[in-house]
Image 1 (cartoon, one colour):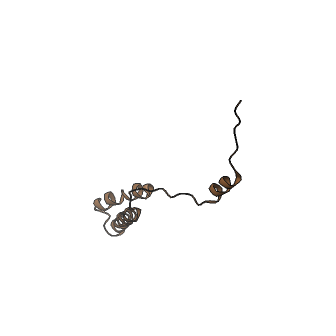
Image 2 (cartoon, helix red, strand yellow):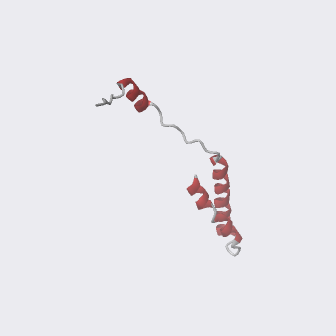
Image 3 (cartoon, helix red, strand yellow):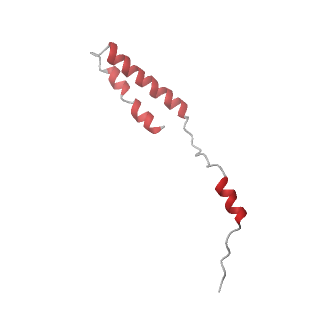
Length: 70
C-alpha cells in the first residue's frame, strides 16, 4: 500500500500569498481604448451637431464592442 504524502506547509503558504499572475496577451489595450473613445466622441458629436448624417452614428456603433473587448 502506497502512502500519499501531503505537501509541506511552506509550499502552500508560498502559493497562497503570491500575487495573481497577469494574463500575457499581444493586445495593446490602450490603443483599443483610444479608438473606442474616439468612436464614441464621433457618435456624440454627430448626435449633437449633425443628426441628419447617419455616418457619425455608424462610426459610433463600434465603441461598445471595443469597450467590451477591453
